[in-house]
Image 1 (tube, rainbow, N blue to C red):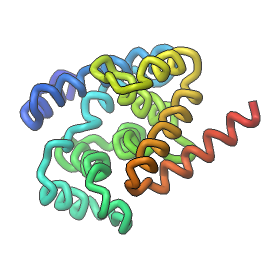
Image 2 (image 1 turned 90 degrees about the vertical axis):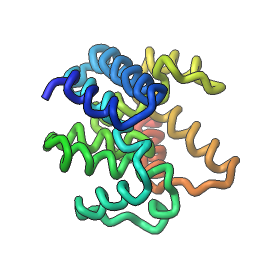
Image 3 (image 1 turned 30 degrees about the vertical axis):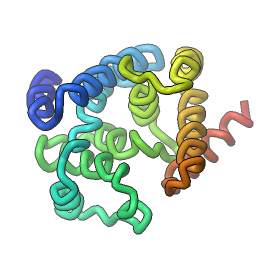
Image 4 (image 1 turned 120 degrees about the horizontal axis):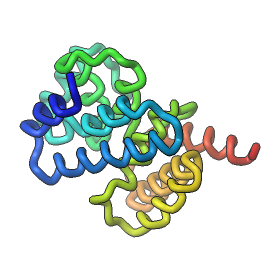
Length: 190
């Protein structure tokens, strides 16, 4: 399938604002992939598909996850905002026939991040943070960091997520903590 094929499929699954966001993430992912040496085609595909199940019902998401044999933790089950990344990784495999582990994992971890992220993981994680439609406080700072150092942008994104969720007293995924600590330890070695 081509990126256009994927766009046609997911365009029917989401509202126009979410579809616009997905297209913006794909565009930013391509830019970051070119800048940092990631596979451009995989970046575009993962970018367009990263939110494929974001507007899918809870029941359908849980069904996709269950059919894929994914066992969610108690924390993941209690945090619906994480479900779309998990169900999205299952959806692209089951419904779109994607078997590329890098693409699947970059979708799976685009919200939380993780320790030892691949280059594609980092590209999708950061592209989602800084896509053209994003306008949160701090996005300009994130864009500047992303243009200088992808690892620093990942670390900044994880720090932002941890601080935001902690302030709102919302559960924080262990993958985010582990990813933050991993990236911070790499930075300390620089």
